[in-house]
Length: 86
Picture 1 (cartoon, rainbow, N blue to C red):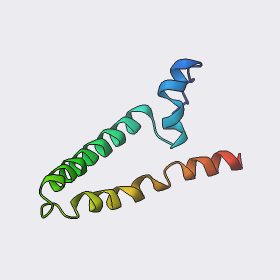
Picture 2: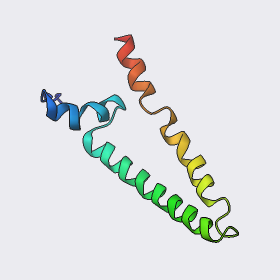
Picture 3: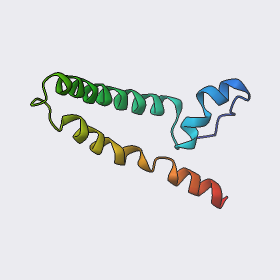
């Protein structure tokens, strides 16, 4: 498959540069970010419940955040390493 030419200017900066920095297309990045946001919303809900009822959801939010962290900690590291080698 042949590489598509990338648009220049504001469009690329707003919609393409960051996904490319983590080696994803716009749609791949959107899918990841929406899934991540949904999981964070669950963690926020658990933390909200815990705020009012301390015995409820005692470790739910922190467990979710611990599970999410490895998914984002080194994203783009491989893509940056490849760019530095070129």
